[in-house]
Amino acid sequence: MTTKPLALHKHGIQASRLVLGCMGLGGGANQNPLTADDFKKAHEAVEAALAVGINMFDHANIYAMGKAEQAFGQVLKERPELRDRIILQSKCGIRRVEGPGRPGRYDFSEAHILESVDGILSRLGVEALDILLLHRPDPLMEPEEVASAFGKLKQAGKVRSFGVSNMSPSQIRLLSSCLDEPLVANQLELNLAALDWVDASVLVNQKAGAQVNFPEGLLEYCRLEHIQVQSWSPLARGVFAGCNLDAQSESIRQAAALVQELARQKEVSTEAIVLAWLMRHPAGIQPVIGTTSPDRIRACAKAERITLSREEWYDLYVTSRGSKMP
Image 1 (cartoon, rainbow, N blue to C red):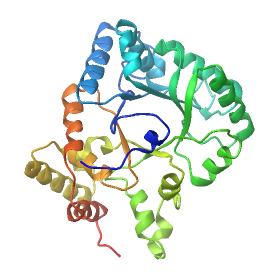
Image 2 (cartoon, rainbow, N blue to C red; image 1 turned 90 degrees about the horizontal axis):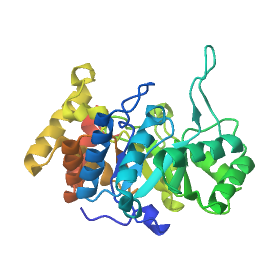
Image 3 (cartoon, rainbow, N blue to C red; image 1 turned 135 degrees about the vertical axis):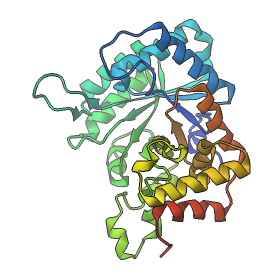
């Protein structure tokens, strides 16, 4: 696949096109202690990723209640030479329920950001993150307070670059107005099943556009500002590989059949086709694959070997959306 450089490269961050999402490490969102099997699984996932050229790893402080970072940290403890070969990204800003009747919430306060980063670094066993993302927009965000936290983290050498997740252009502009350096990434749900991100550009000046649930001009804004667009859930939770397919709409089932046919023709996995479809978009999307299976990691990496034609890309899009182009 011949593609233009990632936006991250413009910021001096030499990340791979694919990112390994580490949410599946650590044994799940529970209080169970980490086991030898959890550590083994983390080692195998990291080794499989590195073997196919993936050098970027995505975390969040809430994944497996912190145990995902702990499991990954054990890998780095046993193989400290890996730290200089990889790019570490984590997220903060979501607070879990803290007791009976206490709601989960978002928190971009300076104290919470600083405390969260200290916890992330401790669990990973590293001195610095390459990128910190704010996980979900906090309606109580004070951009000056976030900027103060970012400044302190940068000055202390704890975080090298900053980004966001699930934010609109206006939210990014507001935050950026108080920052001394650019935000480098925005992580969003983008895949072949959740198509509002494509429909938003297709349905301009169309009545159907009023039903689109995606911020207007978001991808274009990120491209103009050299903000790396990352995709969470790029494989649509395995639907196109057959997971829970019977519960899906007819259009999704037809799209899954088309994915399987293209995979057969190109002698790659269904995962590779779904990822190649995302990566064909000129926004330079960086998929964050959530599998921890070495076999699936290797299967996903084959997406970089193929380029879908314009006709193949549109066939998948139109089939999945279940209606013709307007």
